[in-house]
Image (cartoon, rainbow, N blue to C red):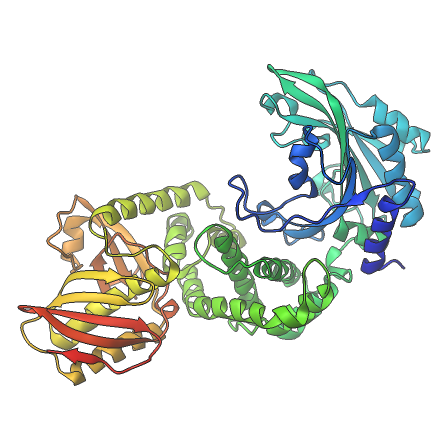
Amino acid sequence: MINANDLRRKFADYWSSKKLGHREIPPAPLVLKEDPTTLFTSSGMQQLVPNLTGSPHPLGKRLYNIQPCFRATDIDEVGDNRHTCFFEMMGNWSLGDYFKEEQIPWMWDFFVKELELSKSKLYISVFSGTKEVPKDLESELIWKKLGISDDHIFFYDATKNWWSRSGPPEKMPDGEIGGPDAEVFYEFTDVPHDKKFGENCHPNCDCGRFLEIGNSVFIQYQKNNGKIIEMEQKNVDYGGGFERILSAINDQPDMFKTELFIDIVKEIEENTSKKYTDPLSIQAIRIIADHLKVAVFLIIEGIVPSNKEHGYILRRYLRRAAVKMHQLTGGLTPSFDQILDRGVLRVYDGIQGIDRHKQRSLIFQVVNREMERFSESLDRGLKHFTKLSDNQMEAEAFNLFASYGFPFEITAELAKQRGVMINKITFDEMYKTHQKLSRKVSSGMFKGGLADHSEQVIRYHTATHLLHQSLRDVLGDEVRQEGSNITGERLRFDFSLSRKPSDEEIKKVEEIINQKIKEALPARFEIMPKEKADQIGALSFFKEKYGDKVKVYFIGGSSDNPGLSYSKEFCGGPHIANTSEIGPIKITKIKKIGANLIRIYLIQHPTSTPDVEF
C-alpha cells in the first residue's frame, strides 16, 4: 500500500522525470503578509498568476510542487468526511508549452499506473459550454482515446467545470483569464447513495460516494472588450488534493481515517473519552482535528491570536476547537498539548516546514495562552447562550462576540444545533455601528489617550475601568477620572481626590483589581439613549458633550441583568472581551500633580512596590 511519504516521492519523481522534464518550484508561504488582496495561499497556482498571463518564470515553462494551502471560506464545510480548511495541493503547470493532448494522458497515467487506482472507479467531468464558450469536445475525445467509456464521462456547466478568479465567463472582467477544466473523481463503491442529494448519484453529487481527486484547468481564454477570445499563450494548471488522493489510494471514503488524521483523532478520543464511531461526536472530532492542524501551520509562520487579519483567523479556529472540546467533555477544556504534539507535529515532522522538537514549545505556548484567555468566558458565554430564546439569538450574536469572545461562526453553529438559523447581516451591522462609534469617540474623547490599538494597550484601556471603579470603592464617590495616557508599557491614570490615599487603601485597590481579573468578568457594551445611561448610573468623564445616543461599557453582569455589572462607563474605546485577558497587575507609583489631583501608574505583572510621592 502506498503511504503518504510514498505519494510525495512518486509525485515528485513522475513530473521531474526526463520524459516530462518539470522543475520543482518552492512552495509559497502559507501566510501572505504583504498581499493586500488575500491573507493566505489557497492554491498552488496563486504564486503563478503573473506567469499564467505571460510573464516568464525563472525555472522555465514546466513546473510542479506540493503546496500547503488554507481556505478559511471552507470552514462551514468542515465536519463531513472530505472537507478540511488546511490541505496540500499537488500541482503541475505548463506555461505556454504543452496542452490538453499531453496533460490528460499524463494525469491519467499517474493515477492508474503510478498509484494503481482502479480504472473502473475513476470518472471524468468535462465542460458543457456556454453561449460564449464552446463545449469542450476536444477533452472528451482525448478521454475516449484513453479508453474511458461514455458512462464514465459527465458534462457540467460553468459552475462546476470552468475556472477563473471571477467565476463563470459572463462575470469575468476585461483582462481576466480562464478556461474549462477536466476533473477526475474516485468512486467509493461501498458508499450507498443518499437520495436527499438527488434521485440519481453522479460525480458531483454531495452524498460522499464520489470524491474529486484531480483537476486540470486549461487556461485558454481571456476577456477582451467584453468578449471571450482565445489566448496566444495557452496554459495548464493542475491541482490534486494530497489528502483526497491518499483517501482514494486507501479506498477510504473518510479522510479522517487515513494516516494524516488517524493519530490526531485517536488523541482527541483519549482526551475526551469520546469515540469517533459515535454519531454524536464524529463531527466535533473532525472539526477539532482540522482546526488544530490549521493552528499549527499558522503558528509556525509567525501568527499569534489577535483581533486583526491573520491573528483573528487563528483565534477563530482555536476558539471553535475549544467550544467543540468543551461540548465533548461536558464542560472541561483539557490541554491541547498532547493532541498537537502526537497528532500533528509527529505526523508532519520534517514536512512543509515542521520541526517537531524546535517548534513544539512555541506552539504549546501560543495555544495555551489563548485557551487560558478564552476558557472562563467560554463557560460563561455558553451558559448565557442557553438562556437565550430563539428570537434573541440573532440580536445577541454580537454581544456574545463583544462580551465573551465568541466569533460569529460559533454562535451561528450553536443556534443551528437548536434549529435556528441566524443572519450574519445583523451581526455585521452591529459591528459596523460599534466601529463607527468607536472611531468617532476615539477621535475626540480618546485622542492622545491611547498610544495605539495594540493588544497590550487595549488590555490596559480595559483595566482603566477596573481601576476607576476600585478607586471609588475604596476612596468613595468623590473619585472621578480626569484623564489617562496608555502605552504598551504602562497605564497612567489621573483622578480627583481632596485627600491623600493611604498605603493600605492603594493596596486594597490593587487587590480588588486583581480579584476582578481573576473572576474573568465579561466586558460588553450597549448603545443606548444618554438619558437611560444616566439613569442606570453609568459614569461619564472629561466634561464631555455627548449626543443623544451613547455607548456604555459594562464589566461583569449580563444584558439580562446589568445590575450585577461591576463597572458601567460611557466609553468608545477598544476593549478586550474578558478581564482574564488583562493578567495580574501592580500599582507602581502614585503622586500628587495638582490641587485635588492625583496620578497613578499601573503595569502588568508584579515587579515592585508602589512609589508614593506627596
